[in-house]
Length: 322
Image (cartoon, rainbow, N blue to C red; front, top):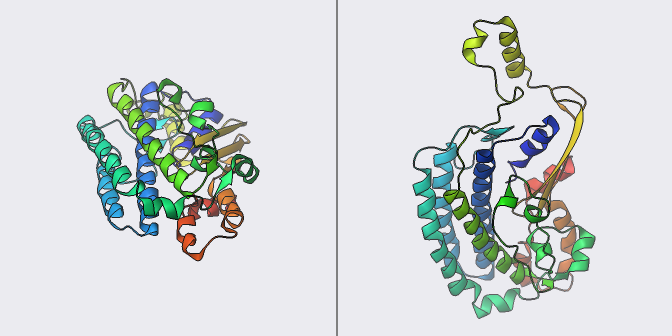
């Protein structure tokens, strides 16, 4: 999901409208990565509390996701498969069977996580009320994602500012009961995985026909045979490949609901092949800033649980760098 949306901001700057098939493919991959990320978050949270087994279960389940992703993109987590105006190539033969197998497998596993670990009285006792904050505090710190929704605010960009055709999917936004603590955030992510499975089922059953990239001169090179006949076509092909497409003077902004919160991308173009100004806002930096306020008065044994505060170091670096 994080890798997908800079391309959406660039496409907005170009004025490119991608085919319906591209949107559904992007949603499908993004939701697979969402489940993948949530599995790691939940299983390592349970490990921090003191239970070891679920983390090994999670890596088995994540491998099934990687099997689907690798079959589609050619790599376990390919950073360059999402392209401006589309994706690198079309879906391969057999992708439906792989996704169907995963959708048949995963619901049973989620029930096992919930029954065997997340309803455990020891886990609940150690995480309830830990790193807690309310809606007012969340908004003041700029908290987004599951941490904000656990306070009772149903703000999810996929619903409020839909992108990639999310408005065409039927799913719900899980929310908490007013207080966001370590336990409520984990349970919210568990429910989000159920909703992601619901979206994936719709992707499988309603995958549109059509091209896997937009037919736009800025994203699609001219036909190769024409470069052998027209010098203008050859020059255009050479410039696009060597210099990159020229971005029209414009600006664009795109928000996406990533696994840890909202990622925002702002681009300004001055009419060259590079953006004049790029600004990326990731969720991890405000979440990191919030930690001192939620650990005050906590026990030393709570620190490992508070590590699950939706912070990713690469996100923090990206935010500070910009």
